[in-house]
Length: 75
Image (cartoon, rainbow, N blue to C red; front, side, top):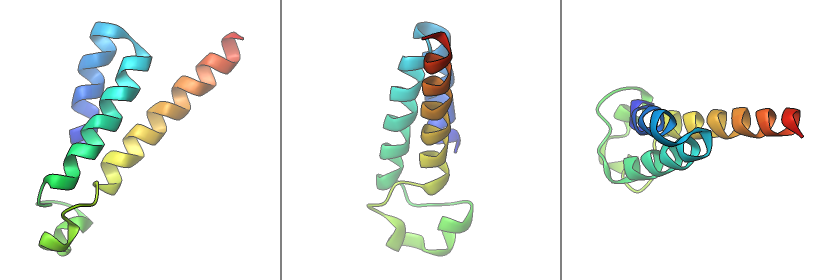
């Protein structure tokens, strides 16, 4: 999850919520090349390679949902 949260937080502070969503999605995608060390994916070992971390993907989904909800309220 931190692989998506950290770049999202940095982007949020610098550029706003839209940039945070993009950064979280990119961070989640980068996890596909990382061998899992913690969490449930660690049980899969190298079989998880090529698949983004589900927790990191969840962070991106949550941020996208927050952004969309805030945009719809302001319309």
